[in-house]
Length: 112
Length: 115
Image 1: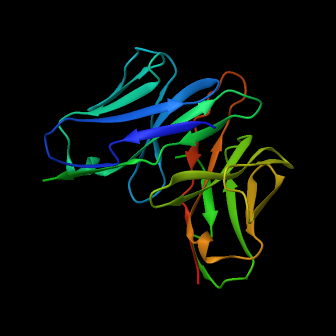
Image 2: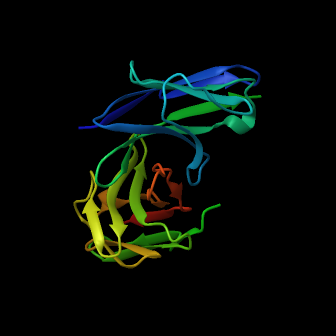
């Protein structure tokens, strides 16, 4: 059974802090890993990672994948209150029909 | 934003009644998915479709059925709703044809309450 584990499950930081969100996985036929942000509505896509060691970056957010150790991290620098959300990690596995397996999500609260 | 709509957006129903949720897309994507989201469980796949009339079960399919008679519409039916099916339901679409990866785009969600 495919498994995706995110940690910590929740954290509270202050504006300006840097946070690191973790996602580890155990799946067969890994194809890609995806990060989503969810703010009380539909999840919105952040990054897709397919290769180890290549950092994806968008503004203050960045993410990297380690396919040998089977994990990914999502970094957010200089956090703002608008970064408060649930961050979801999902893994896509190759097969006849592609499906995503999601972790339970990390709730990030950024205090002013 | 991807053209995905869900209807209804909110619904309150009673135990034992049938309920149908609709997902409509204007992107002509091949794959469509239904998820439920509950506190402490994240997003869990109920059913998915990989083409017209082609569907398969996800990890929490018991008590649910689906149908896809045309590319743009994917229906989720609860034949006899139970309180354990109170949840937020999300539809998602993706197009994994060719070299595309499974980047899924989500609809706005339907909040279903079963009393």
